[in-house]
Length: 298
Image: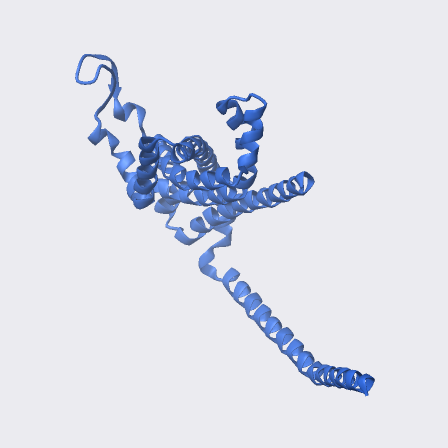
């Protein structure tokens, strides 16, 4: 009696499972066919759209190939890359300082860092760029000396902060506001035990930070900072609004003379796509290397 009570529900459950599987198989097969059909249709539409776009006469491919490696365009590329490197370097240095100020136990330092992040995240980048370009109106001269007293040295601001450096400061200081939050979160992700172990062997706080905490935090921060670098590279095109001879400004100068607007913009698009793809490729391999290091540590 007891054995029949046990085996009957089990056999019934097996029968139901077989019935469900047999009934579900045709449905799953039908869904698979529908998915493949939809994917093929989307692929066909994409191919037709790309071919239609490429064959448009307005793109002017002969003009594109003519100016793709023009000397002025290549010089604009150099200025764009230099602007990206200098701005990101400034942002990294400032962001490390801001992140540590935000994590400080000193309320004044925390407040200054918080106000800085709030201020530069609140201003649109183009507005900030124009403000830096006209900084000489606010501060006509840069001077060193006693506040409200004699000056030891001074120089005209316009002689120091030209369009290029105005763009570097605008991009760098605003990017620092965003990157500092990334680094702050990375620093908070380091276990407290790491600091306690470093203090136990007699490390000073500065040595502990640069030898123990910062290297581990940068492993966490590098992937989002790589994304920020890619975004910054594309954002440097805004420098054309203040006549910095970057890539976009270079092609604008050409099409203002030849009126080949679309082909020259396509030249800029191709070069931006090349450098963004190169950065994305490097980011992919860097993230893989960092993930291997994390697994090795574990």
